[in-house]
Length: 304
Image 1 (cartoon, rainbow, N blue to C red):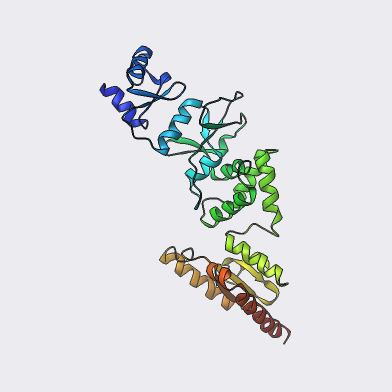
Image 2 (cartoon, rainbow, N blue to C red):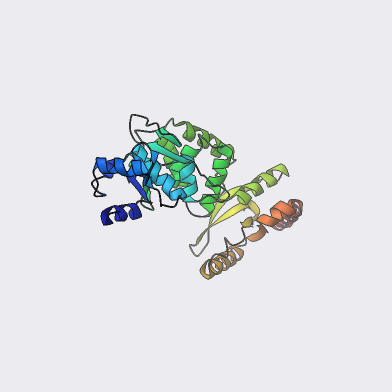
């Protein structure tokens, strides 16, 4: 193996595309000889893996991109996996070709989207990939939309996406089937989309027990501080906060800010009830009872 070929393989997950023969210091005839000898193993048409190269998920993805061409980007389920969804894994290589033709390659799922906006793609680990927001829109065509909505809530809680940008992406996608499906699922929730699954679960729980609360009420204090409360009853200044384990304790600064925020709300006359995601799963009725009792007390105070 020549040093030039070795460097090329090392930089490309052990792969070589026929069109890159000059970059690897080879002629097309030399590539054919290496294939005949078994040193290069065909992966896709015009794409080869060195026989000694270890097979990895990254290699499979890179091979797919080489096979489809320079207009290809990672998308759909592969993009979800690459951006990171807890509990979601994808071994399939799924791509979108930004062209009018639809390349066919065995072992790959290729979608065609000649109008995919530059605003909806980004560079990640050396590959072009749809943004997290566009990945959710595309995934809604191949994954149950309610699951995609759940991933959207989770990513919003983890600050990987912003819900306003997701709305912009849905609008930009126009009559895209995934955009239509995802918008319908997100709109089905009463009020704005919850920033986490437990937060959404609390809203549904309160509605089922006949004490629906307002979602994401923004409170500006006399000092000029602005705080958002997960669920609340503004008329009696009762707020409900869902605490995910680790979310509010992600750093000492976040912990301090949370205490300061609570103190300022208390000074403004708010009472805040906290519930953990685990408590919502294990003892939802107990928390509903607490909310009911607190509402009764707050209403008595407001009327006196």
